[in-house]
View 1 (tube, rainbow, N blue to C red):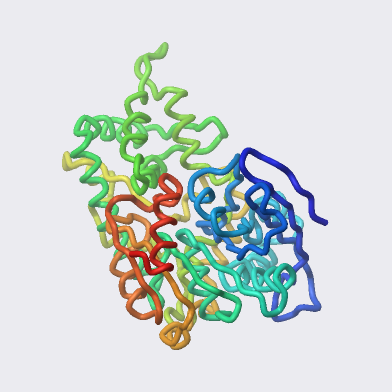
View 2 (tube, rainbow, N blue to C red; view 1 turned 90 degrees about the horizontal axis):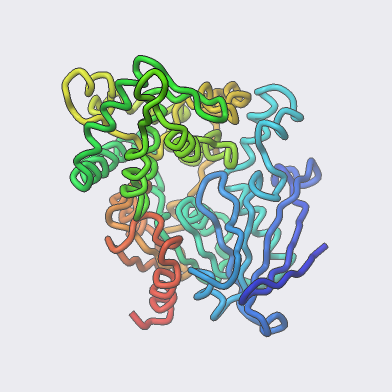
Length: 437
């Protein structure tokens, strides 16, 4: 059933599809996948080319448009856009502590979630494409971050369904293990810390003071979560966004108030920290995060909490050592740690499930280097030179390994360039596709 709505500058239509949980067993269990079609008013009945948007994540639902703005405004000049809630997110049979509990114990939950990676997302999209466009129809792809990873999987599994592909901040390493990802990530995050402290030098003492306070007495967040030193460091995820350093600074400058027993962490600060740390709205980001790098041909030992293991190789991120030595306390970045499943109430019920997924060793390969090398689908990619989330060197290696791919490398934006300046970013890629740049 499809339902249509009108918002400022756009017309939207809801679509719900039934897809196999396991595409290798099409006769088995089915789940729902939701997608929102968006078109410019007055063009509803035109034969426009389709563009499928693949959201970042994992575990991120497609954005909810309020009107014709940002990258969508540029896309609607030329395309009919489909915003896909990837399986397990948004309105696509959501997977969280509430719904997963109905599937049984941790083993049953882990087996279920093993079907929620990029390969399954791509097969969902292919089923949707055939239903909406017909067997021979093709659409364009726009993949942001993890959506770019999915785009590479799409070109590995079903390039015949793709007319052209645009990727922003999402060229994954094709044969890069989870360990490799984090060995490259920690130095990048350290550089972001250095840039933040150079921009806001007063934050060095503020962060050290907060860390010392939490080392002696972890705080309770408004949702009942536990704010330890490690959890406090994890708000460094902000440093990967264009305005993230300033957002972090403003959060820190309201950290303390005078209570009845002296200085204490303010409710304003604790509420702001909770907003950054809670996975209540996107638990699959945490549960499936390292699995997006799992490939049997790359690492037969599984991911095994790679971010936690590799962190030991970078002692500068040891807050206790920094407090003892007088060094700045460094924030971490896009890393998922086992302690998160003990500190975040939204993740606590999924702790054993996450452990089983971390131990899983049979992740199928997500990319075909051979097929990608022979790729004939035009691909246009934006690579952000200072990207904290996706390693630039890995991205450029992939750019050189994929046939028919043109890339544009820029330091004008951070990883969130499509969100903050989406019309300009997408317009540049579309002009590349048209041979205008």
